[in-house]
Image (tube, rainbow, N blue to C red; front, side, top):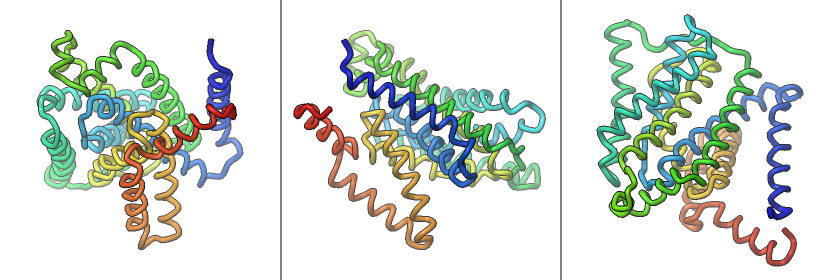
Length: 310
């Protein structure tokens, strides 16, 4: 039987998403925009962790997959309905992930990280070169969609992604990914198709990043390669996951929420010092709490449980 605490947790989660769904009906534009930023980084962080947390690979290609989604909306948004362009953006990102996976997922450690970092920079400068030399313009205008609709679209993607990751981690497929993270050789000896599982998971991760890029592009009016393929989108998901606790979905979400809100607050209050303060706080947490913030929360919950509080 499930513990009462389990039912309480499920009820609280459903209530939270119900509240978030109604949020745009009474809130201001600023807070709607802020929550969309939170949703964006939750999607990027959990998508990144879907592959990297279980396999132990450190991918820095998030900016490439996100940017492909952004440019898909910028190029096709005027001719094709946005509801169709969004999954197409995810599909294009998945195709890119397939090509990357087939070519470099045999690399390990720092070599894989360097390759994926170089990929994002290559695409950024390739698009910039094409625009300057072929089209004669830099960047593109993007169709604008009602902010409330974009908010609901981002929230829907968050819900779908979290449900999918929850199921994935508890499936045979998820256990195979964990075995790959512990030892690829041992996993292969046990009959796990290591390369296929890595490539498919990498594609699934990229799909959600591409969808997030396609949706968010509709709020930016104008995009260029430096905006769409900014390396910020590669480093922040990894940093947020590590900050919150990369091995736990709850930790990844906590890290994404706290760092997004922290960055926004510091940028407003200390526009010239916020990166210094932001970086220092993140380094302190990672230095003294190697398991992330979830490493502080989990022992507290266990203590409460032992004392009959939870």
